Image 1 (cartoon, rainbow, N blue to C red):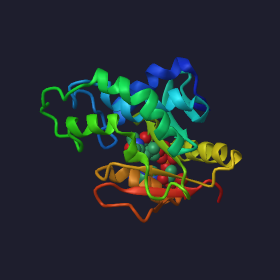
Image 2: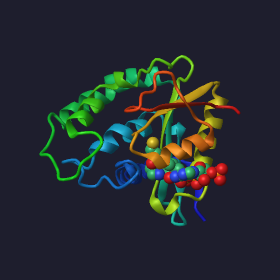
Image 3: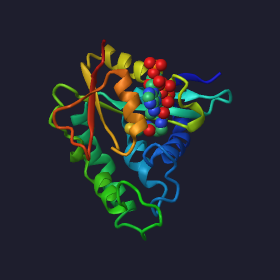
Length: 206
Ligand SMILES: CC(C)(COP(=O)(O)OP(=O)(O)OC[C@H]1O[C@@H](n2cnc3c(N)ncnc32)[C@H](O)[C@@H]1OP(=O)(O)O)[C@@H](O)C(=O)NCCC(=O)NCCS
């Protein structure tokens, strides 16, 4: 039976793998960009580096991570850390976009490189009220079994314990399935949400 447990450093490569396999509007992003490490380097790995204690995984019977939720409690502090510790290395590893692939992603590689090198994009207008943010991804075989809801509950409880009132997330508007999930869990749109860049929020306590 898969089970939720805290993240361990040994899960890092699995986090990278899960991110890649779910990064194209919820589906497999392998080969979409010239470098498969791009998506994980922007949307997953900085999180486990910065806040491993707010990362939780669903582990299968062999204790392999097959899903995760990654959070930061204070997005503004994360932005500062990212600018100092993560963005310089990211820009060095990925100085310019590679050749365009046949796949048609929501974000071009140039946009992804810009996002990865510029954490200020995370400083949303609602940070005072919704200081935390998250990313959640489950491999296809784990979807639809209630683990997404449970992972969000685990993260909300961990944040509430630290006195964090609410959290937010940004999402790919093409991912209509994830949107239905967030709506079902009670997330609501934040005032600065735009159709091309939806922003959703929820309190950490019901
Ligand atoms: C989106 C995702 C995290 C949801 O997790 P999940 O484990 O599949 O969802 P759950 O089984 O926990 O569903 C929780 C509730 O949402 C509802 N729900 C989930 N997906 C839904 C959908 N596509 N349409 C309607 N309702 C949906 C479920 O019916 C369930 O309702 P209930 O608890 O009241 O019975 C998961 O499917 C996933 O990782 N998808 C691929 C990656 C991705 O899109 N990540 C999000 C990026 S923003």
